[in-house]
Image (cartoon, rainbow, N blue to C red; front, side, top):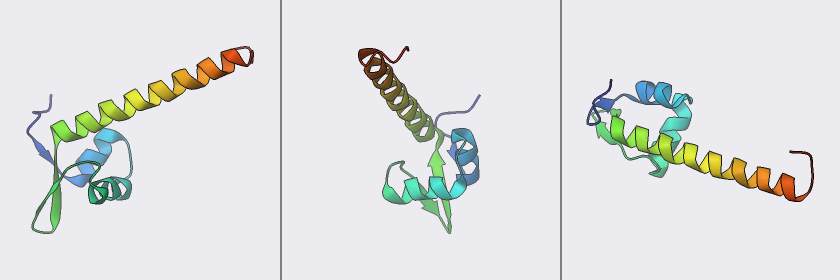
Length: 78
């Protein structure tokens, strides 16, 4: 269990999302995922990471559903 208000390091957040730390930092710099700086370190709330993960999975499922629909309309055997 992870408290939703817990703050994670970039390494912990990247591990939770199963992405590289540099890619996570890019998302943080773009503002895609909110974060704050503590000295030279970035901290990310667990709730923000879980929200991003949920939104990302929903978008992926929607894209897969659309691809499946297109494949069926084109009679590709799916």
